[in-house]
Length: 139
Image (cartoon, rainbow, N blue to C red; front, side, top):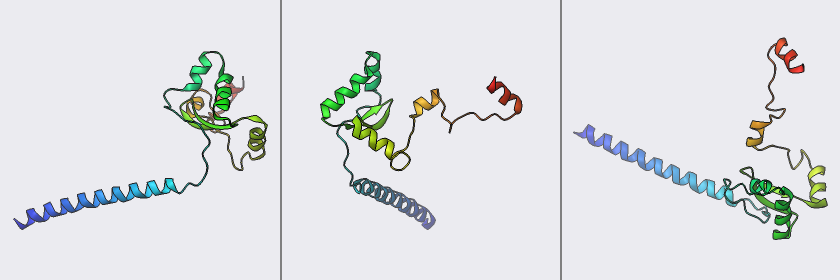
């Protein structure tokens, strides 16, 4: 009989430890997010599913999407969702200068996963495993 109560106590104790651990983890994660002191650019990422840019592209004017955002937020820097990925857009001469002068220092070139699936980058490139495969790739 005592063995039965001991098992119940152990199960209850483990459940309590699990809840306390999850609660502590949640507090740690929330505090980590609050520690960011940077200023976010104006704009919204919206629902990634909406893909605002695709909608503008289907209308035949993808540049209109960017121009509308620049005028809407009165800024050359804004955030949005592009191909389902949240991004920050830099436009204008100052944005281009910042981007190209800090490449591989503060910013990194990348492609969204949806694009990399269609067009592999050098990081995702197919490496030939035999000379015949290499020859086929060159011809």
